[in-house]
Image 1: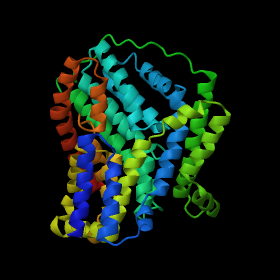
Image 2 (image 1 turned 90 degrees about the horizontal axis):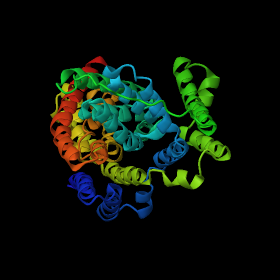
Image 3 (image 1 turned 45 degrees about the vertical axis):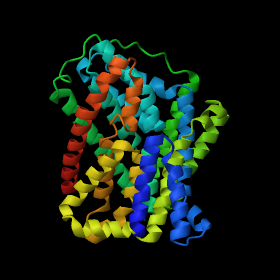
Length: 431
């Protein structure tokens, strides 16, 4: 009965957040307080300790560092240069949009930021070149999602943090790298499907005009070099550790590397280099995402203490055929993400199920983590979810918005979810 109440509390938190537009994390914290204190006799301190401090710190510090490039225009100019490179290949324009979105997302801008300023650019380019706008929308959505899954970018950092908390700290970097690779492959294949497999997508764009962007300013060049140095610093030793696991000095340095602490170090360097005003950089920290993820995390910790996670894992392990479990995770993730946030709700709710379920049925954890992420992100283009809503917001007229809504809901989402389910099925066989 208690476990049922906790699961219902998670669902109600999501529904209230969706209906009101308020942050789901607030309601998750309230449910954690009432259920934990009055139904489980937990002390307030125990409940507060469920706030995932390490996850919050990493999200804050990494976003803080990359906000310098966002504020001073480095990321946007990088995107425009990537698009300009494809000016002579109009038929590959969807892939140019994908690479531009994925590139700046991988550099640390994060999914929401990329979609916020790439969606208007993409729809404008589609208008000028007569390219199908839904194909353009799918391209930037896939790019922003898969790029943000990079190990040092927003989503990848969150995945690593959640896996660390689930007991996979030793392999979280390798797992996140595999998830990033899988999401890139899925995205490119899905864009190919849209570009060549749909009637509107097969129309070759014409008259695409890309003006050469202004050169990077000296300040932006400094920012590019600092981002490259940051990415190289936090990637080199985990990669060396995988290649040379017996080298003691590499193992030692790798054990001391932390992306959050490194991001603070590079943020301080950016401040001294005066790459952007401190006030504007701090104002762009995604506090809404932090509260959502950490608030749901508190409720999940109450669920762990109540044994709900083990109970759900045991039910799935005994009630579903082993081969069907990854597919079930993919579909459940897609349904949840249709109305809610992948990072704030879906992954914090489902990742804790993986250790117990993997141990019970013998499915490698990486398969389940990958199915959750790809399944959840497959429905992110829903007009009721983050990606689709940002695309709808970028439409310039009510007529365009009315035309885009049903195409997102009844064409892009079903195709994406079905393709993700098939992709995850193949992935579960290969891995």
